[in-house]
Length: 632
Image (cartoon, rainbow, N blue to C red; front, side):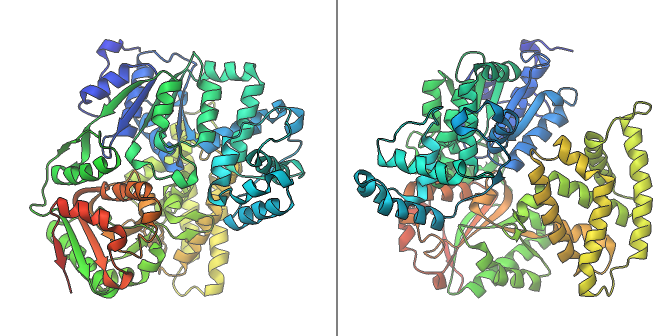
C-alpha cells in the first residue's frame, strides 16, 4: 500500500534532523555529514521513502553502490529489515562488483580493438612490477617520451593515470608520455593475453567503454535504476566517477551521494581531491549538510571539530545527541617509557572498567595507524594476564582479513549451523538468522511455504550434524587429523546449503569468486580453531571471538564505533610518514578520533620514537587542553 509523500514517516527511528528531511525529499543531491551523523541510516530511510511512496515504482529499482563489501551488506540488511516486501527492488553492491557485472554480462559489446574473446582472471600489479614496467619503458620507449617517462610516479600510475584515461573504440597514436605508458600497460596486461589478468581499474575502464559504445544498454540501465545512491563518496576515484557519469549523468536518474570530505583517506588509491564539488557541478546537484552526531558525546565532538576545521575551515560544528556518562576527562594522553608498560597499563585499565561497569570487551577498541601485527604480541599477553583476549581484526586469513571473514554472509551462515548443531536450545537469534539466510537461497517448494520447508530441512540436517559431532570428538585430536575433520565438516555444510547453487545464483556474494575466497578462508580459520578447542560447543565462539578486545588499523575501523577507544601509538614510529602528506594523514587521524562514543585515550611510547613528526597533531590536542599523564 502506497503512502503519500507528505504522510511518510521514518522507519525504526524517532525522527530525522531538519536538513535530512530536506535532503530526503530532494532530487539529485550531494549530502555531506560528519562522523556519527548516520549516513547509512539516511540512505536506508531515503530508500524507504522512495519505495513506500511509489516515487520509485515497480518494477524499477534503487541501486546503492558502496566502496566496501561490508558497507554494501549493511545497507542491504537495513532496507530488508525495514521493507521486506520491497527488498527485492533494492540492489546494494560495491563499485567493483557493479563494473565487473557489466563486463561479465555485456563484454560482447566491446569494440573489436578491445574484444574479450575468452575469460579473464583478477590480478593486481605490485609496486615492484609497476616500477619495473615504467623503468623499462623509460629505457626502451620512443626517444621523445623517455625523459617524461622517467618522471611518472609509480605509486599513482594505475589509479591516477590508467584510471583517468577513457578507452577509445579505435586507439590512436599516443602524443604524450602518459598516453604512451597507459597504452603499453593495456597492451602488456590485456591485449596480448588469451586470459588476461586485470585489476578493477582495468575492469572499470572496460565497463565504461561498453556503456559509451551502447546507447541502448545505457537507456536500459537508466530505466532499471531511476534512483542511484553512492556511499562514502569522498573516496570516489576518477575512474569510478567517470563511469558513474557515463551511465547516469544524463536526465532520467536521480543520484544521491553521501560522505564526508574530512574522511577522505583513499587518496593513495586515486580518490578525487573533491568529488562532491565535481559532482555538484556536473550533475547540477543540490547540496545539504547534516550536523547531528548520534555517536559521540559533546566533549568528543568538540575535539573532533578542532581537527575538522584544520581540514576544512568552513566545517560546521556538529551537535551531539549523546549524553555523557563517563564523567570528567573523557580524553587523555598516556605517556610510557616502553611498550610493555603501555600494554600492561591498557589491559589493566580495560579489565578494571569491565569489572566496575559490566561492559563487554567488544565495547573497547585498540586502534593503530599501521603494523598492528607488531603490536599484537605484547597487547595479547597483557590482556591474557587480565583474563581477556585480543582479536586482531587485521590478521590475514587466506586472501581475506579476519574482519572481512567474520562479516561475510556465507561465513556467518556456516558458523551459525555449527553453533546450532553443537549447542542445543537457547539459540533463537542464531536460528532466525540461519533460517532467514536459508530462505533466501533455498529453492521454493510449490507445495509448501518456504518458512516451514526451511525449518524442516534445517531440523533434519541438525540431527545428522549432531550425530556426526558425537562420533567425532575433538578432545585429543591428533594435529594431522584436524585438516581431515575440517574438510569433512565443511563438505557437509556446503552440501546442505547447496554451495554450488548459491554460487550460481550469486545470493551471498556478488561474484562466485568471492564465495570461493570466503570458503578457503573459512577452512583456514576453522582448522585453527579445531586445533585448540576441547569440544564442539566451543567452536563457534572461538571462531568469531566476539568476547575479545578488537585490535585494528584506523582504515579498518572506518564506519565502526566503540564506547572507549585506545589510540595506540601517538608517536613517530606509527606516524613516520605524516609529513609526506599532512592533509591525508590528518584525515586518517580524524577517522580514528571519531570512532569513540564516550572515551578516547591516546598512548605514546618513548621506545617508538619522538613525537616531533606529529607536532601539529599534538598542538591541536594541547589547545584542547587534553591532559598528558606520564605512566612511567
